[in-house]
Image (cartoon, rainbow, N blue to C red; front, side):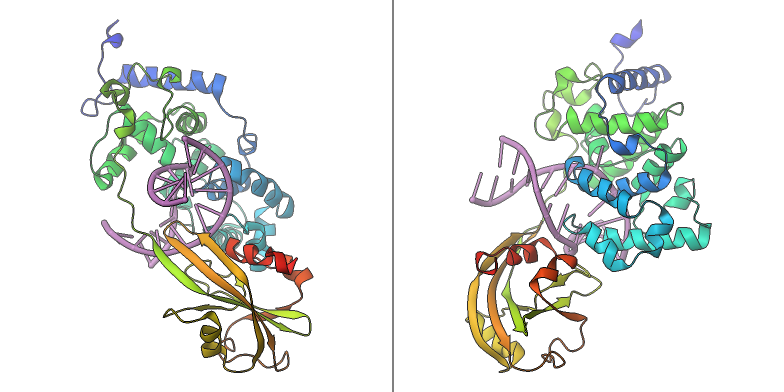
Length: 367
DNA sequence: CAGCCGTGGCC
DNA sequence: TGGCCAAGGCT
């Protein structure tokens, strides 16, 4: 029985015996400890695809209610293809990374038009579709179609990086980790194997305090043997945080307020907000607003201030209220060429708004 | 390829 | 409290 002393390293990996043993250990653990998640109870590629996109950079707990609601509203790929982008963005509201929602819409239309409404089954075909990269393609191909494809998400990157103590710089490690994932995935059970790998990363091999004594791979793990499993794999340096400061103006006319739609690209793409003016200098918010809107705003009043954290930005928005001195047909010059709507507060919830705008809607003085 | 793209939870 | 982190992909 040489396996108790066999040492794991990438150079001679895989040794068939080790790979067979690692697969068996992981799948046995998954059978006992795997999570019961709704997208594991179906083989419907549409449902699995939706879950995979929602789960990009987003935790399971956050996704669950969105997933359930989405499948009730848009149960098939045809329903999604036929839906308005507005409906899609509204269902996505609050999940973040809104390009994912636009890409879902685009891809659904491509599947209907170019594939007759039938999902392509190979990772290669899937990866061509908007929003589906290498890992998501592997996840869908293995989960929905039982194909032997590898995945590499944050969980798998951590589990495999520690198993083989990968300490290369991030770019180099990436290629190595893909190679390991591909060699390890079990051709007899690619779906369960990949799901097990992610569960192990999410519940045992966690980022901060891994529970090595509960790990089915503890005997082989080079990261654990090193005494500092959290050193692996090396994480890329964080970029610095920048500041956005400006004024959100609630412009009222006949009981309605002006909403404008953000551009189709960039931050919070396609979502609705109150006109926002970035402050260039350190001037008063009233002055900032008048510079942008001219003198057709009457009775400017301060309603408060909202702060919001993005991953790499901090937003501070002064909130001002003003009365529009003209009619609904006329618009401030800076709004004229943008998609807009005059909306009474009771209809605000029908518009897809980012979190910072929801904070404005919840200000005490507006309740 | 490095920067960009949201939000909520965690310690 | 502030920084870190999460079932990544796009440009």
